[in-house]
Image (cartoon, rainbow, N blue to C red; front, top):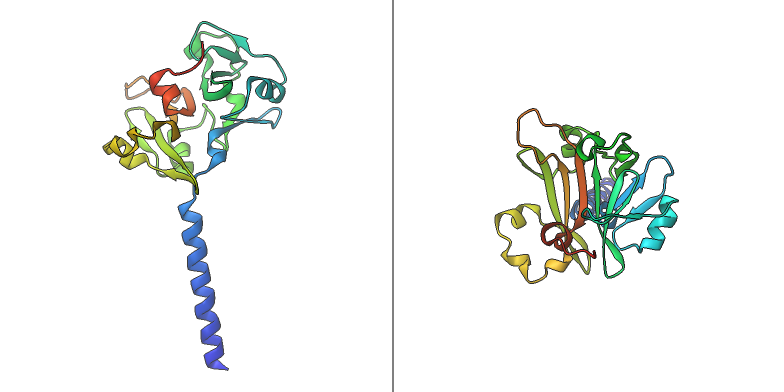
Amino acid sequence: MRKLFLLLACALFLLSACSTSADSSDGYGQSDLSLYNAETKKEIHLGMTKEDIEKALGEPLEKTDYFPYYEAPGISIGFRGGTSVLFALRKAEEEGMREDFSGHFKTSRGITVNSSYGDFQKKYPTSIRQDNSFQFYLMREEEGYTDITASFVEDKKPYQDNISSVYYIYFGNADTSPDAKPSSIYVGDYRAIYMADVEK
């Protein structure tokens, strides 16, 4: 009886260890390329068409001359090949707007432009801080999304041949002064954010 109990205990321990290992290996996923409207509870994610995003937001997107070219209250969106490749949330004072809708949107982990750096780091523990921003990179692979933040920042070479599968998430402020507070969130693919590869 005692041997049976020990065998069962060992089996449960191994199952628990395997489960923990699996959970930690796929910590990031498709949902991290999404934003949620806190008012309507609707989700928009990279890869949606303009029509699908307008349905989710409940109003038409306005085309502008400013990158990323389409806007709705609180959000700017860039498209390529008919699908969304970039979401940008910026506080009203950064854009000179009178009313701020940017806080209506949050990431899948509950972060908004009004969140603190500490909150962001807790929700995205593998992100890397650079000046007044946190950022990280994901690579889309057949088995899912892999966090490549550290290796991407240190050496981009392993991913240059497959840059179309790299995604970037940014939280912070381009202002490097010590008292600068977070003012924007960007979620997009590498080509859209770094190469301005979106439709005009």
